[in-house]
Length: 278
Ligand code: ATR
Image (cartoon, rainbow, N blue to C red):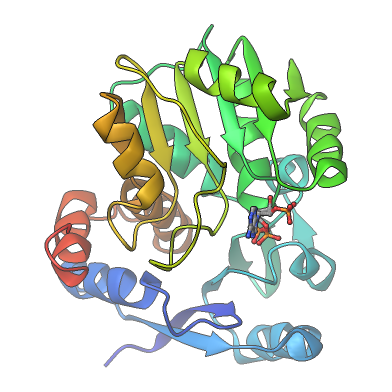
């Protein structure tokens, strides 16, 4: 019987694949952990975190919309979480809840898997939310030449560009400039939630892609968003968010259990769960 608790707090959280992935891993390795999804409304966040501390859980993931707000509820946050400005993983260290962020590391490992080295390259990121920041900071720290942001709302885009510019060359592009930057970039990363629903419009009006670039959408369900389909048809290499999900989870799992996460098996499990990657 598992006697140590791991989990995820979010709102909503029912769609999360983390319970499936982590319970598979603990079973596979014969570890005494159970991973539970907790739907926590924003007004209850503080009380929920206090409760998790009192219950002595081994650790937990944090997802939308709590990744930033949870920082104030923890005993400490590490340099990575502070740099990204958000927490997705909390580790209970002898009763102290310590926050970190494995999203950026997960993203970078997924690029490695795709054999893409961003150093010295031009990159475009669409969006200006929490995932944008984790991915943007990680890419700039990995030495991208220029990071161009594209976002629906100008002021949010400018604010994100200003934050990212602390880590390297980051600018906001609009209109024709944005389209040109996307076509010229070696890597285009789509970080908004647009594309999860079939009825969603494209995150940018008329994207142009080309052969030789990598187009990455952090959405994993559907496996191919409209955005990725347009990129594939233009000859670009495409990648969805499943590998990032597995690698960020892998790093969290290592922090909680000290054990190596069965990455390839978990990836296969999730592909099957999502309907064979279609
Ligand atoms: P996160 O959950 O990642 O912290 P979010 O607040 O959900 O962030 O927003 C993520 C991004 O999705 C934002 O860049 C947002 O654009 P705005 O800054 O203009 O709000 C983008 N986004 C969400 N819905 C969108 C839509 N219908 N069209 C274009 N962009 C959209």
